Structure formats: C-alpha cells, structure tokens
Length: 144
Figure 1 (cartoon, rainbow, N blue to C red):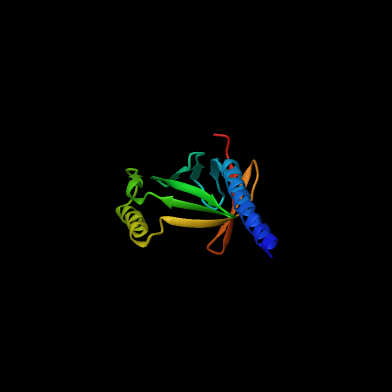
Figure 2: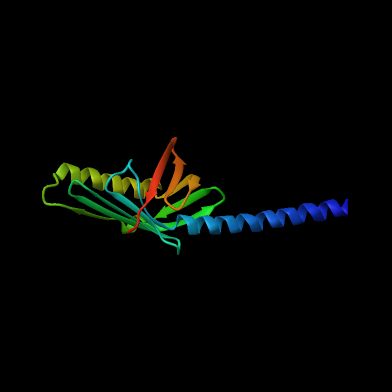
C-alpha cells in the first residue's frame, strides 16, 4: 500500500513537472507576430517575455492594445491592459464610427472582456490554430 501511495505521488509530481515543461516549450513556439484572414489589417505579436501587442488598422482607424499572455495546459490566456488601449482616427472617419469604436473600447473595460482564453489546437513554425467562442481561427506567423 505504501509503495502504491509513493508511486502515485511520484507520478503526480512528474506530471506537474512535464506540464510545466510543455507549457514553456509551447510558449517558445508561439512567440512571434501573426495575422489571420478572419481579421484583415490586424497583427498580433506574442513576445517571449509574456507581453503581447495587437495592432489594428482599418478604414482610417488605428487601434493598439497591449497586455500579457501565458500558456497553461492546452490553452493560451490573454489579458488586455484596457486602460492603455490607444485609438487614433483619420480625418475622414465619421463621428458615428468614432462613437461606435469608443463604445466598443468602453464595453471591454466594463465587461471584463479584457480576459480571454483560447484552446490551442496546434502550433507549428508557420502557424497557430486557436479555438474559442465556437470558432477555430488559423493565425499565420509573419517574418516581420
């Protein structure tokens, strides 16, 4: 009986150690800059130090968001620093479009949408496939 308890305890410790190694290895594989067909004009940069940068440039509106990211198990967790979201508007952007974008940013701040988790389906040297909200999205790694 004592031998079984020791074996189970060792297996649990080994499992935790391996999970930690695989998360670190996965984080190293993910680090880089990505784009996705689903979100044209948007780049996502996952830095090796656990910071991320999201840039969006569409129809005269430029948005930049920063935050932190981490890998736990088979998921990536992102937390956007909503107080540092930057939005710049071009001269031709209508006031109603500006108001709509401001509402989106304020809704993120109020709702806690700044915290997101996605299941990692796969990561290669050239792409990452994430799943969340009933959707699967392929992100292509760029060479920038």
